[in-house]
Length: 275
Image (tube, rainbow, N blue to C red; front, side, top):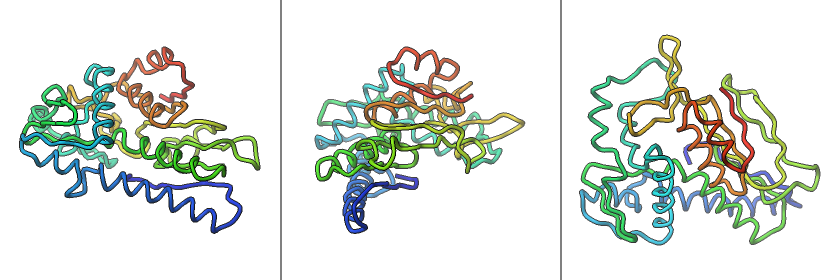
């Protein structure tokens, strides 16, 4: 998941808590091993190394690809799972190392879902292009873990994968789960949210950014230009029924730049946006 992952629960005993944690960990590792672009031999590696040949995918992967395509169309190509190759130019480590324009332009030839032939269950990716499901993988894993917990136990639990989280229900010991939205300064909460049901997802540049000549470049890149989204919010948090839905809205809002609030106002979910 590329981030700290945790389970908070009101189990009756340490043993019960360990059993629930084991279920969550097993599902997180299953999804990581299957869908991470960093692991050789999995379905993503097979697709990315197929050199233009069609690859047949399983039903779960097909579902993720369908969802990715939906987001691509909803965002007018601003959300694109082929844009991961731009990481070859950009490293958001807090430095002032802005890549050369020519380096970015060269990579744009390898970006574009419209260049991919997706006829489920067959995916044909042009040679040298890649897909990366990191933009939706964590939220999907959270929802999967919460679903498993609900199916085996009625213990109140909160699953948190790198700040994207969902709960099985309200805790028994208090009225709600208290969740802090991290500030740009790190280590402090910019806002506290009381969560009883559903999920929260946050997109922002608190940890991944570049800073040069007083300009902060957030890690959310517009794949159509190869550059970070202009006038993007510092942080957007969305509450929704599922973590996947919350993550979809927070990401699409970040990609809207200056129009993030306008986009979110047109949705039916509660949100918090910090500039």
